[in-house]
Length: 183
Image (cartoon, rainbow, N blue to C red):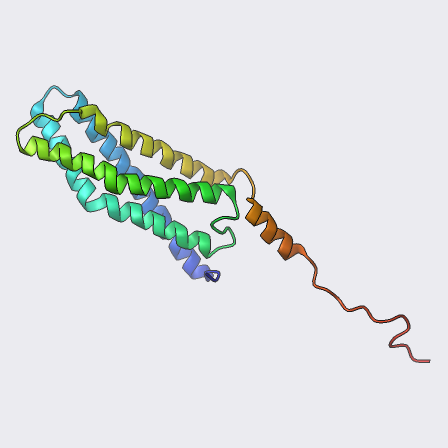
Protein backbone atom coordinates (compact mmCIF):
# COMPACT_ATOMS: atom_id res chain seq x y z
CA UNK A 1 0.00 0.00 0.00
CA UNK A 2 1.31 3.45 -0.79
CA UNK A 3 1.64 6.17 1.79
CA UNK A 4 -1.59 8.01 2.56
CA UNK A 5 -1.80 11.68 1.68
CA UNK A 6 -1.82 14.03 4.66
CA UNK A 7 -5.59 14.74 4.45
CA UNK A 8 -6.37 11.03 4.09
CA UNK A 9 -4.09 10.14 7.01
CA UNK A 10 -5.71 12.74 9.24
CA UNK A 11 -9.19 11.58 8.20
CA UNK A 12 -8.38 7.95 9.00
CA UNK A 13 -6.69 8.97 12.25
CA UNK A 14 -9.75 10.89 13.42
CA UNK A 15 -12.04 8.03 12.36
CA UNK A 16 -9.82 5.51 14.18
CA UNK A 17 -9.80 7.55 17.38
CA UNK A 18 -13.58 8.11 17.27
CA UNK A 19 -14.49 4.45 16.71
CA UNK A 20 -11.87 3.24 19.19
CA UNK A 21 -13.14 5.58 21.90
CA UNK A 22 -16.68 4.50 21.02
CA UNK A 23 -15.69 0.84 21.36
CA UNK A 24 -14.03 1.55 24.71
CA UNK A 25 -17.12 3.42 25.94
CA UNK A 26 -19.45 0.68 24.73
CA UNK A 27 -17.36 -1.91 26.54
CA UNK A 28 -17.53 0.15 29.73
CA UNK A 29 -21.33 0.33 29.37
CA UNK A 30 -21.53 -3.44 28.83
CA UNK A 31 -19.40 -3.97 31.93
CA UNK A 32 -21.62 -1.74 34.05
CA UNK A 33 -24.78 -3.44 32.78
CA UNK A 34 -23.29 -6.92 33.38
CA UNK A 35 -22.29 -5.92 36.91
CA UNK A 36 -25.74 -4.47 37.59
CA UNK A 37 -27.38 -7.68 36.35
CA UNK A 38 -25.05 -9.89 38.38
CA UNK A 39 -25.32 -8.11 41.73
CA UNK A 40 -28.86 -6.79 41.76
CA UNK A 41 -31.47 -8.52 43.81
CA UNK A 42 -34.16 -7.50 41.36
CA UNK A 43 -35.11 -9.81 38.50
CA UNK A 44 -36.61 -6.83 36.66
CA UNK A 45 -33.37 -4.87 36.87
CA UNK A 46 -31.34 -7.88 35.71
CA UNK A 47 -33.72 -8.48 32.80
CA UNK A 48 -33.54 -4.82 31.76
CA UNK A 49 -29.74 -4.91 31.95
CA UNK A 50 -29.50 -8.04 29.77
CA UNK A 51 -31.97 -6.63 27.24
CA UNK A 52 -30.01 -3.37 27.11
CA UNK A 53 -26.80 -5.31 26.60
CA UNK A 54 -28.43 -7.13 23.68
CA UNK A 55 -29.40 -3.83 22.02
CA UNK A 56 -25.86 -2.49 22.40
CA UNK A 57 -24.35 -5.78 21.28
CA UNK A 58 -26.61 -6.15 18.24
CA UNK A 59 -26.37 -2.56 17.04
CA UNK A 60 -22.95 -1.26 18.05
CA UNK A 61 -20.48 -3.97 18.99
CA UNK A 62 -19.62 -5.38 15.56
CA UNK A 63 -19.59 -2.04 13.68
CA UNK A 64 -17.32 -0.37 16.24
CA UNK A 65 -14.96 -3.34 16.62
CA UNK A 66 -14.60 -3.91 12.89
CA UNK A 67 -14.26 -0.18 12.16
CA UNK A 68 -11.47 0.14 14.75
CA UNK A 69 -9.74 -2.85 13.20
CA UNK A 70 -10.13 -1.56 9.63
CA UNK A 71 -9.07 2.04 10.30
CA UNK A 72 -6.09 0.85 12.34
CA UNK A 73 -5.03 -1.47 9.54
CA UNK A 74 -5.29 1.32 6.93
CA UNK A 75 -3.28 3.67 9.16
CA UNK A 76 -0.57 1.13 9.80
CA UNK A 77 -0.22 0.18 6.15
CA UNK A 78 -0.52 3.73 4.84
CA UNK A 79 1.98 5.42 7.14
CA UNK A 80 5.69 4.98 7.86
CA UNK A 81 4.78 3.17 11.11
CA UNK A 82 3.89 0.06 9.12
CA UNK A 83 2.09 -2.99 10.41
CA UNK A 84 5.16 -5.04 11.32
CA UNK A 85 7.89 -2.41 11.65
CA UNK A 86 7.28 -1.40 15.28
CA UNK A 87 6.46 -3.72 18.15
CA UNK A 88 3.77 -1.47 19.61
CA UNK A 89 1.87 -1.37 16.29
CA UNK A 90 2.08 -5.13 15.83
CA UNK A 91 0.98 -5.82 19.42
CA UNK A 92 -1.87 -3.34 19.12
CA UNK A 93 -3.01 -4.94 15.86
CA UNK A 94 -2.90 -8.47 17.31
CA UNK A 95 -4.80 -7.39 20.45
CA UNK A 96 -7.38 -5.56 18.34
CA UNK A 97 -7.85 -8.63 16.16
CA UNK A 98 -8.27 -10.86 19.22
CA UNK A 99 -10.65 -8.53 21.07
CA UNK A 100 -12.71 -7.77 17.95
CA UNK A 101 -13.12 -11.48 17.21
CA UNK A 102 -13.96 -12.31 20.82
CA UNK A 103 -16.40 -9.39 21.07
CA UNK A 104 -18.23 -10.12 17.83
CA UNK A 105 -18.51 -13.86 18.30
CA UNK A 106 -18.16 -14.87 21.97
CA UNK A 107 -19.42 -11.82 23.87
CA UNK A 108 -22.41 -11.24 21.59
CA UNK A 109 -23.34 -14.92 21.87
CA UNK A 110 -23.23 -14.74 25.68
CA UNK A 111 -25.28 -11.56 25.71
CA UNK A 112 -27.89 -13.03 23.35
CA UNK A 113 -28.08 -16.20 25.44
CA UNK A 114 -28.68 -14.22 28.64
CA UNK A 115 -31.28 -11.97 26.99
CA UNK A 116 -33.08 -15.01 25.52
CA UNK A 117 -33.17 -16.59 28.98
CA UNK A 118 -34.80 -13.54 30.58
CA UNK A 119 -37.21 -13.26 27.63
CA UNK A 120 -38.23 -16.88 28.26
CA UNK A 121 -38.67 -16.17 31.97
CA UNK A 122 -35.82 -18.44 33.03
CA UNK A 123 -32.91 -17.38 35.22
CA UNK A 124 -29.51 -16.66 33.72
CA UNK A 125 -27.33 -19.58 34.75
CA UNK A 126 -24.04 -17.66 35.08
CA UNK A 127 -24.68 -13.94 35.66
CA UNK A 128 -21.00 -13.33 36.42
CA UNK A 129 -19.99 -14.84 33.09
CA UNK A 130 -20.81 -11.61 31.28
CA UNK A 131 -18.70 -9.50 33.66
CA UNK A 132 -15.29 -10.98 32.82
CA UNK A 133 -15.23 -10.49 29.01
CA UNK A 134 -15.88 -6.73 29.03
CA UNK A 135 -13.51 -6.29 32.00
CA UNK A 136 -10.71 -8.05 30.12
CA UNK A 137 -11.53 -6.16 26.91
CA UNK A 138 -11.54 -2.83 28.74
CA UNK A 139 -8.12 -3.62 30.20
CA UNK A 140 -6.84 -4.47 26.71
CA UNK A 141 -8.21 -1.20 25.26
CA UNK A 142 -6.61 0.85 28.03
CA UNK A 143 -3.31 -0.94 27.40
CA UNK A 144 -3.59 -0.30 23.65
CA UNK A 145 -4.30 3.36 24.33
CA UNK A 146 -1.21 3.61 26.51
CA UNK A 147 1.10 2.02 23.95
CA UNK A 148 -0.37 4.23 21.22
CA UNK A 149 0.71 7.26 23.21
CA UNK A 150 4.02 5.93 24.58
CA UNK A 151 5.15 3.93 21.51
CA UNK A 152 7.46 1.62 23.50
CA UNK A 153 9.76 -1.28 22.56
CA UNK A 154 11.34 -0.04 19.36
CA UNK A 155 11.34 -1.72 16.00
CA UNK A 156 10.90 -5.34 14.98
CA UNK A 157 13.55 -7.13 12.93
CA UNK A 158 11.55 -6.24 9.80
CA UNK A 159 11.55 -2.60 10.84
CA UNK A 160 15.30 -2.69 11.47
CA UNK A 161 15.87 -4.21 8.02
CA UNK A 162 13.72 -1.53 6.37
CA UNK A 163 15.52 1.23 8.27
CA UNK A 164 18.92 -0.19 7.32
CA UNK A 165 17.89 -0.37 3.67
CA UNK A 166 16.79 3.27 3.78
CA UNK A 167 20.09 4.37 5.39
CA UNK A 168 22.35 2.75 2.81
CA UNK A 169 23.85 5.44 0.64
CA UNK A 170 23.35 5.18 -3.07
CA UNK A 171 26.40 3.98 -4.92
CA UNK A 172 28.35 6.82 -6.36
CA UNK A 173 30.56 6.51 -9.34
CA UNK A 174 34.00 7.76 -8.57
CA UNK A 175 35.93 9.45 -11.34
CA UNK A 176 39.44 8.28 -12.03
CA UNK A 177 42.19 10.46 -10.58
CA UNK A 178 42.97 13.30 -12.84
CA UNK A 179 39.80 12.92 -14.86
CA UNK A 180 38.22 16.17 -15.83
CA UNK A 181 41.40 18.18 -15.42
CA UNK A 182 42.55 20.34 -18.19
CA UNK A 183 46.19 20.85 -18.75
